[in-house]
Image 1 (spheres, rainbow, N blue to C red):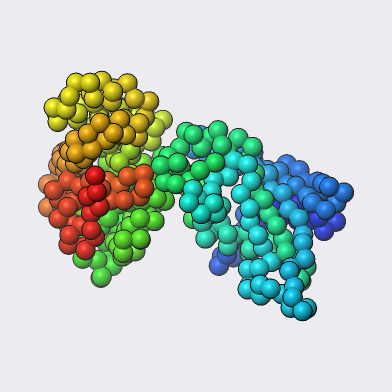
Image 2: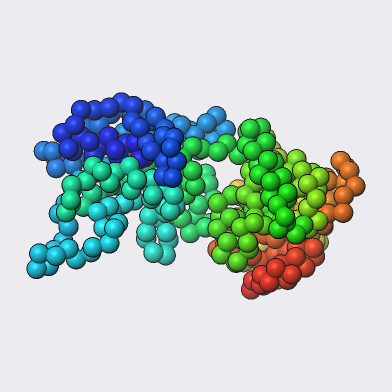
Amino acid sequence: MVAAAKAATQALAGEHFLAMQQVALPDQKESLIVPVTSAALLDEGKQAIGITYADSGIGLDITRGLEVWACVQLDKKQEVCGKEVDSSSDSWLKLVAGVGVGTNELSGDICLSSFARDLFKFNLRALVPKGQLLRVEIVFPNGKELAQRTSNKAFGIVDGLALIGTQAEAQISASPEQLQNTIALLRSKCETFRFNGSLTFVIGENGLALAQQVGLSSKQILKVGNWLGPLLVAAAESGVKSLLILGYHGKLIKLAGGIFHTHHHLADGRIEVLTALAVAERIPFNLIEAIAHSSSVEEAFLRVECSDPELAQKLWRRAANRVERRSHTYVKHYGSWPMEIGAALFDRQRRIRWTGPVGDHQLNVLGVALDRKI
C-alpha cells in the first residue's frame, strides 16, 4: 500500500516511475524494496494512481496476490485569515477507505493500525509540499468479496479487509519459522527477573487488542499463531505456572476438539466439534440439527442463542471447559509440569463471555470482569 502510494505521489510530482520502491521503516535503519506494477496520472494530472500486489507469503491465502490501488491527490489546506485551520503535525495527510477496504461499523473510520498509519507518514511526508494536503484513497478491488471469508464482520469491520498489521513484513502464522520465533519470545519473557509464572496467550490482533483493553500487562501477553500445541508444551517447559488462553470463540472451539494446529489449511471440524458438545449438553435435537447444518460457527451460535439464550451460554461454557481439559491432556502427554491452563472466549462484540473453571479463577486474580450478559 505504502509503496503504491509513494509511486503515485511521485507521479503527481512529475517524477519518473520507479518499479522498485524503497519503503523505510520507522525507528529502523533497514528498509524494504517493494515492487510496484504501475503508476499514472489521472484527471488531467490532478490525481494519480499506483498499483501493486500483496506479497503475504505462501500460508496466507486471503491476501496473497491481493491487488492494491493507491489513488492520491493534493489539495490546499483550509485557511482562515491566512492561517491553517488544522495546524496539527498530521494535518498534511488524509487516509481514506476506498472500495474493498474495511471500515469501523460504528464510526465509519478506516480500519487502520497505528503502525500502518506511521508507515504512510514516514514515507510520504517528504513528497508533500508545504501547505498541501495529500489525500490517499486505498482500494482493494476484490477486498469486499475476500472479507466474507474472514471474521472481520464479527468484530465490527465492514465493507472490506482491515489494515491492522503491526509490522511491515507479513508473519506467516502457520509457518515453522514463526513457531520458532514465538517460542524464542516466550522463553525471553519467562527468563526476565520480573516474570511471576503467569502468561496469557492471545490469538490474533483482536485478542491482543482485547487483552490490552482489559488492562493485562504487556509483560504477561504473548501473541501466538496457529501452533498452539507446541507452544503449550514450550510454556510448561519454560516454567509457566498459570497459562490463560484468550481467543475468539470461533477459533478456540478447535482446541475443544483436540485440534492444536488451528490453521484452516490443516484442519477445521469446528461445526462437528460444536455439534458433539451440543449432544453432551443434551440440548434439544432440533437445535443439534440446526448446528450441524450451519455454514459457520457464528451462524450456529446465533441459531441457538435466538432459540434459547441461556442454553447458548451453557453450550459455550462447556466449550471453554473442554478447551481447558483438552489442553491439559495435550501437555500431560509430553511431560508432568505443574501448569494450570485456563480458557477465556470472547464473542463477536469483543466481549469476554465464557470461561472454564480455571480461566474464571485466573480472570478474577487479574481483576478482569467477565461479561455474563445473555
